[in-house]
Length: 92
Image (cartoon, rainbow, N blue to C red; front, side, top):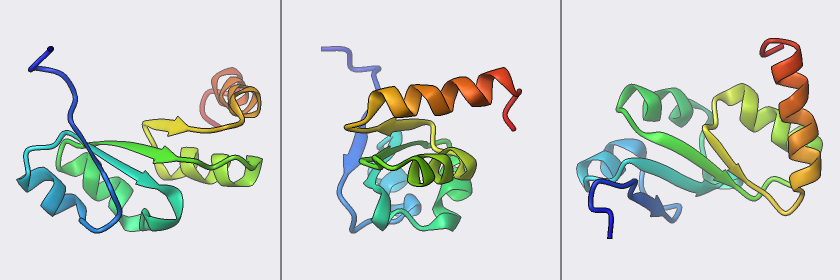
């Protein structure tokens, strides 16, 4: 076991302060439960953000624009097309 690895909190009942206090390193939430202000706050606290499971293009674009570090989806081809757009257009 890699004890130095990432530890994520997978539920919707805690805010970023509480997740950090537990010693976790990642906010891992279903996108309807992730408040907009928690993206920046999570990053300020040193947490990464994993959002699941946006499957529509508009949802995915919203998560990217809000600062999600990781997106777990059932539509990986769509997400890769969106990612490619951002890479090709330097984040725009």
